[in-house]
Length: 121
Ligand code: AMP
Image (cartoon, rainbow, N blue to C red; front, top):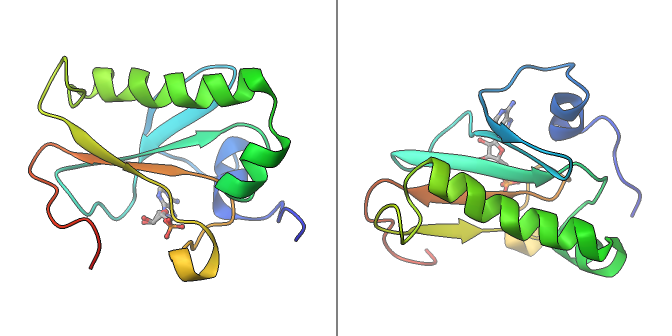
């Protein structure tokens, strides 16, 4: 499967579509989900062109992998939902068709600010 250059997150990364930015560094961009499912619903995406988590784990560099994981923690701290700054959160990645992935650019959802509830429905 080839990376779709016109997916919505690719357009956000290129600055063609606005987003409600939370944080950005060399490796990741984080912004609020346009259709929040919880009080806090942030997205964290790698800047590299990776379709999903499998693609990322197979093809990303060690620095990109570290950057994404540290980025999730940085954003959780900024939003005061990490276990040291708040009451915790759920990090979730939908992968592929059965995983319910809609946007074909790897992203982690961070849900928090309230009890997140049942893991899978
Ligand atoms: P997924 O089903 O895991 O691929 O999730 C895609 C997510 O992207 C959904 O939660 C959407 O609400 C969100 N989304 C789609 N377009 C935008 C956008 N322009 N800005 C922020 N979030 C978006």
